Image (cartoon, rainbow, N blue to C red):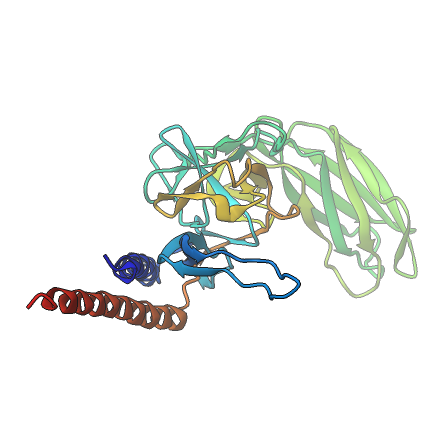
Amino acid sequence: MLRSLYSGISGLRAHQTMLDVTGNNIANVNTAGFKGSSTEFQDTLSQLTQGASGPQAETGGTNPAQIGLGVKVAAVTTNFNQGSAQSTGKATDMMISGDGFFVTSRGGQQLYTRAGSFEFDAGGRLVSADGALLQGWTADASGAVNTGSPIGNIVLSPTATVPAIATTRATFDGNLPSDAAAGTALERDVHVFDASGVARDLAVTFTRTGTGWDVTAADANGATGSGSLAFTNGKLTSGGSLAVGGMTVDLAAVTGYAGMTTVVASGQDGAAAGTLVSFTLGNDGSLVGAFSNGVKQVVGRVALAKFTNPEGLEKAGASSYTSTANSGNPQVGEAGGPGFGTLTGGALEMSNVDLSQEFTNLIVAQRGFQANARIITTSDQVLQELVDLKH
């Protein structure tokens, strides 16, 4: 039988594989986090019809004569170049800028993906569309994240709370009028909190004296404190704070110019207990929760993985990969670290498939398939000629 017949068959198989790979790329042109693949060919073993000979004194050397036996698919490689960004505005959508992978767990198997579309399930866990659980670290009650501990499911319960914070400092700023008449009193109130989150009023009274202003403070629990403020050319020169029931009233920003009465309580560091309202994603993977009491605190951190050889990963479906012997072991770390990339919230990485390149590959694969089919038909015609010699 003709060798060309089998070479043509191998060419059909190889170009059919190229068509399959190209078709899959085109089918996933809008799949978030999808990485396109390419087909690499190589020739198969060649039949040696004449060996090489070395040069002699009277004759020159000859080269080997070999006849190829066809083509085969050497590899189907994955292109891990960055895909374009698509803004979604959805807090649970995340995009990696760089070479890292999200770590997920599905059925106890650890998987890796570039697709960052996640949702909350009934248990408050972040999950992908197929139910894979996003892995990372959950913060403790104080907002601290131990990234040295093993990764696990990230749980953001809508009933999560932050404890109340007792007020230790209340701050005032603004201006006390230096041209006010002696005996003028200005009272300002500020809400403060105890350790259980119970609010109470702290009343601070400023009374004009011949040399400056006296300050008295009293809270609803009966604690009191007093002091005095002196100004030179509108700038505070003495006083600046007083203690009231374990709290410090900070007056260092108060001024004493004429014609303005703008002194006001500018803030305090206490808060009632609060529940989780929303969260945002930082570039380092930190999930910062916004609570109903105005406190913003880290509630978790997304873990990322990197590999020595990402092309060695094996596709596991649902835009996920598993590690193999040639990908190397996963190195788990935080976003922003070397080789991990950074995270962007409210955006997704789209497919990196280049349609113009894929349609060109489609034409090349189609023509290659047709050419190899012509080899088979030509070989068949030659065999027919041999058969016709009998007649």
